[in-house]
Image (cartoon, rainbow, N blue to C red; front, side, top):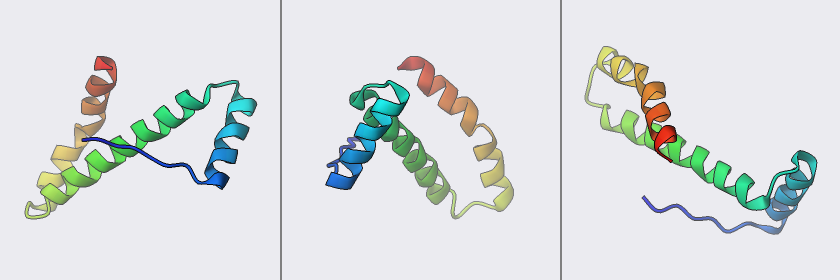
Length: 76
């Protein structure tokens, strides 16, 4: 899945401010935001895929989602 973004002027100012306040690079801030979005999108897509399943099946599948994210994060 390819993810990209275009910053509006107000978002660019926010990133500049955060970079100064947290002594982080703008690239690191944006990469972190994109990473969080990808995880959100993955979780949303997984839930959508389980719509035909029972609530118990979905809960069981999502109970391991944090473990899955740890594996994904460790591979980066």
